[in-house]
Image (cartoon, rainbow, N blue to C red; front, side, top):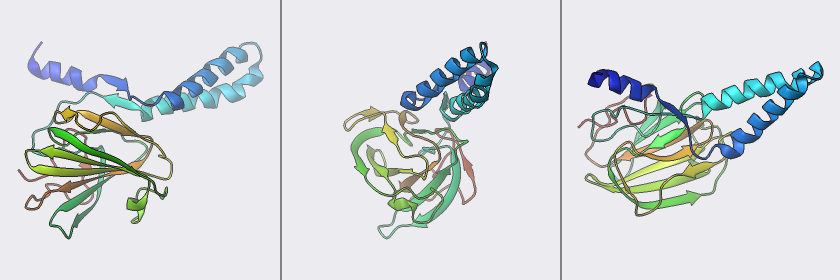
Length: 216
């Protein structure tokens, strides 16, 4: 098998994201139970059909495909659409990526480094596309990298009320390594250090671990 063929096969492998069991298992169990009961009494089909459809939708929502890493100093931490790009008073540039319920919800390390801080901040649950959603429930990450300190923020939305970190302070990460999950639609902000320009514009689609974020 050629290297290109192997890469394509790797990118097609799909697993379920860690941290989805509390949501997925009850739905699967309910769908299975009502489907079995509907074989005895068709009236149970009224419940079995929507529960089976919901199970299929959740399997899609919580997919976690393997990725062939892109090339770049800083790669997108999230699948989604660039919602805004803002200059910060300290010279950094914030790139905000909106994740819809149809996107993969697993986030990845934008570059190799060591986790120096993981801070959970309580907040509201405004829709992630709202301009004030940066005050929502969120997890603030800091990574020590070859480019210095990199800050990334996972922001919960109106539906996504749980952020599940996969790694801890002190962990050394490779670029594109999975670092956590935001359930359902939400937003991820990454702050580019001073002097580093974004390679994306508002409206661009991003793929976690693949799309370059900065102009290297």
